[in-house]
Every structure is written in C-alpha cells, then in structure tokens.
Length: 436
Image 1: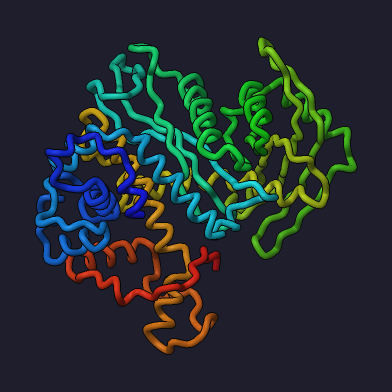
Image 2: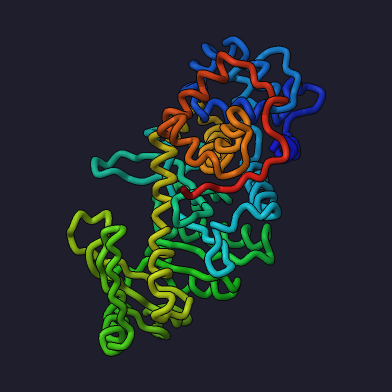
C-alpha cells in the first residue's frame, strides 16, 4: 500500500514539502476509519499518545509532528483525484496476481456492480458539482460519483474505480440519465484502458438498459446483467413477456427451504428489439423470477433482468443470484454513509478537497474489508494461543469482536492508546477472503 501511495503524482513544489504524500494520505485514511469526524476533531486527537508513532509505522514516514488539518486540505485541494484511482487499480492487480479474488468471479469474469451516489449537498455553488432546482424554486448544488465495485454473492465488496459526475454543460440543470450515463461511458473507457485484457461481468440497474450501453458492452466483450423494469422499457417488456409466455419449456420451479425462498424462473433467449429513435437495436436474453424471497417477509415479489449470457435450466438459478448481487453496491453506499467512514460528512469543499476525501474513503473501505473479511484473525488467534495448524480456529473475528462496528471502535481506541509493533505480526501467512 505504501508503495502505491508513494507513486501518487504529488502536485506540490518539492522545495516546500515537509510531509510526504503517503503519510498525508494515511492521515486522511485514518480520519475516515473513525479517528476523527471533522477537521476540528482531528486537531483534538492528533496529539494523543502513540498516534504519531503509529502513523509513522503504517506509512513508513518519519514525521516529527502530526500534520495540521489545513496541511491535509492544502494537499487534497491540489491533488488530482484520478491519482487515487490508480491506487485502487494497483490494489486490484496485486490481489488478482496473488490469486485472492476467485470469489469475485462468475464464469471466469470478475463481477462488478456500478451505481452512482451523492455525497455532499449545499445551497451554495461547489467546485465540480451538479445543480438542480428544488420544488420551492431554490437551487441545490451537490457532488456525485459513479462507483465501480467488485462484489461477491456472500457480501464482500472492494472498490475498483470512481468517476465523478459533473455538469459539464455549465449552468444547466442536472439530468440523472444524461449525466450518469455520460459518466458511465467515460468510466467504461478508462476501465478498458486500465485493464485492456480483463473480462468483467457488469451488474447494472435499469437506467443502463439502453441500446448504446449494450452496444458498448458488446464491443468490449464484457458480460452484463441489467435490471429490467416494465416502466423503463414498456415496448421491450410487452415483447419479452409475450416471448417468455410462449416458451413453456423454459420454466424452473425453485423451492429453497434453507433460505426460505420459493419462486418460479422463466426465461427467453434471443429477444430482439430496436427502441424508437435508436440507431441500432439489440438482442438480449430476458428472465424473470416470481415468488417469495428471504427479504420479502412472505410477500410475493419479482426480479427481472436482461443479459448476454445464454440461459438454460442448468444456469438460470445461478444467473438470478448473480443479478441479485447488484444490490451489494447499494449496501456499500449505506455502510459508507452510516458507519465511521461518514461518506456525507465534509472535511472541506475547496477545489478538489471533497473529491479527494471521497477517494480516501474508498481506500479506507478497502482496508476495512481486508481487516474484517479475511481469515487473518484466525491466523492471529492460532499464533497467540495454541500455535496449532489451520482449521483449529474458525470465525475468530465474530467471536472476538461480535460486529464490524465494535471492531472499528476498538481499532480507534488502539490507534490512540497502543503503539503498533509490526514485528509481532505473523509473516508469510496465506490470507484469503473468509465467507463463513
């Protein structure tokens, strides 16, 4: 991590630099891991006990004093947020090279969920923001980002890329479809450039069910599963429902007693449609699942998706579970907004400050995931107790801390009160994501 952070293009004049970039970024990451909920609070905690030695231990720096919050904002205001996308990319490549990401694959393709979130609003103009008119006629300014995350069916999520959404048309009003779709096309191009040979399976909501998006994904030879809503594509829905109803052999009843789900899948391959006004049409495979699901509390509900994966009785259940995994990115945003990460809490809005802090939250979330979703606690427990072989300690994290929230509170207390002793950590252990 320190190598990746040190390779960030530092915009400051070298002769004026007192604090190295990786050390400043670690301070910002630790702020969002719960150490401080505001710039003022950082001034209260930065002098606590062993915090400065811990920052130096983590970053590999040799700071004599913890940086002031204004120093962090000065650096963030000038840093290109895209530099931190490179850090996320390098983390993904490292984890992929070390073969830690098999859980994130589906049919050889990495599952990635894509969605947008807002993270700061104001009644006054903000740098690099969008604008909309409220019902009372007042203008509201807000900052928004399109986020790409690797996801697993078991709920583990890793940020991969961020594309910020801006009103590039000047003072024009925000239009969700135009702005978010434009950001999606920019994101797809950058992702393709960063990983030209990588195969992705995109999980998308109904906003992206357009001929242009499907054509782009087909040209990249990526797989996709897109939410299909009747009101978003009424003419396609009428056609697809008719084709599905005709093919009575394409049915599969599922009774999953373990998860409390009972539903019927129906599908149709090769539905061809050309939307009105579109230059070209598309051919997709459509499927629906109707019944009762674990989250619906006994009420009947429906899932509907389109995909370029050919459907049959052998894979329809798996494809349904794959499509349902898109909600993992919604969960990511909820965690980032309602946990110690405090996504919607501003540490500054001047120039690039809020955008850089958004990026540091994604890196902090990655570190949080590595701490709480791998088998590292099992290894620590084995070393500190019996020193026995693998398999003797299961669910060590859950036993020791009960919840991620409790663990993050313990982490904050430890950083402020106990020095980190890197030499005591086990070396050479094989760390894998834990789905238990």
